[in-house]
Image (cartoon, rainbow, N blue to C red; front, side, top):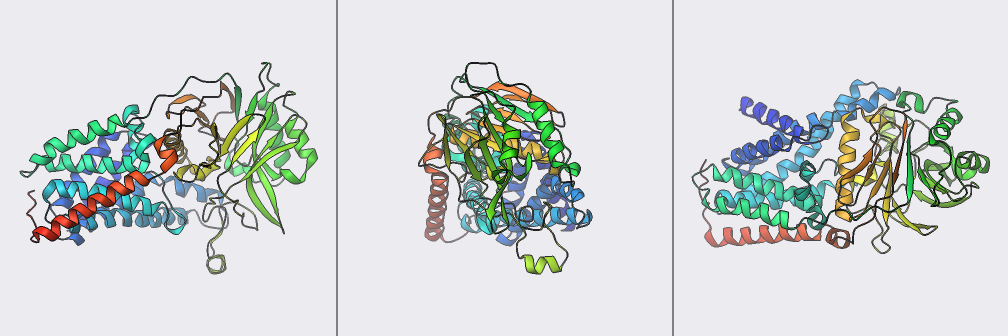
Length: 498
């Protein structure tokens, strides 16, 4: 039993190679086939759930190692605590794998191998949805993100979202696992049908780019230096210097600085705004991450829009704050245990009201700061659709794997919403993403540079941008209802051939 659990754990760890930065999706698919073949032949739902938990634990431990890197910048807590955080978060996310496979086994007892595959897809969709909403939500690395290297497959997220694409992945893997069994005749036809249907749902390629010039600035300030006392003005000068001279084109240039580029309250200091805006031409605009004031000594993680005169034209306050990063849950208890926020400072950030579209000089933009971009249903104001999204982030906390995974999830959001995304970071990965998820231009990580490009155009509103995850959730519930009715009708469990 111990050897089996160790093997399943290793299989989960190996499956992480399908995620960024490696993106070797066939390895993940093969790992899932082996997992579902084993779980489908379990003796009980508990055994199937156990297989899911050990697989999810291995996947989490291997793919979330970037989290430990963040603790190297927090003097209040030992770095070793970072690895404990990785293990705890992996164990938590593994619970959703256990829930999915345990429930699928119980529901499909009279439905054979193909039924187990379809039940697993349905329960996985529901489990992934729960992972994104419970306890503030942690929808990081949805399974469907592995398909980004295959553009046609990934673009089906325009209809079914990352949630539906994750369910399709489980369905295909489960059906292929069923093909290897003597009871796999139904799966032999269902697997290719599922693939063809998914490809048929692919959204359109990106519309031709606009002619609006944009400039993204990546200064490569290490996180160890970011919050050192006395560094704020020096860092501002680095941004100003790297931003270069004002644009020379007839159209106004849009200049983008990353999250927390300015760490002092920008709304409270007109002189600071004027200094930041001095790099702009007469019609240019600066979009910058900065600290904002919320009153009563409280602060926000914000984006401000400035014109060449330093006037404040728009503001967005981050709504989806990072637990233990920007605020400390259960602070009274955890502070007594020695816990602290990862972001320096005495006061927690306070959240903003949520997605909104800013209308500035004929531009309609939405803003998702850092971690907010991983939440599929929380990136735009559906009642007032923007023409593009700005995603400033500070991924310097998270080593190599974290920024690459973050970029991959931003690409999925672009596909889901049919909107281009401008992603500015201090150390990488800074990129311009088209509305079909393709990267139009990017900068290498850990390199001080500016990226000059043009603003991509939006696609038409997608099915997902209108309905959110309704389609995959309804499909999952319908499938489970059908399997439960079949189980009630037939009564006796049907033998699964291994």
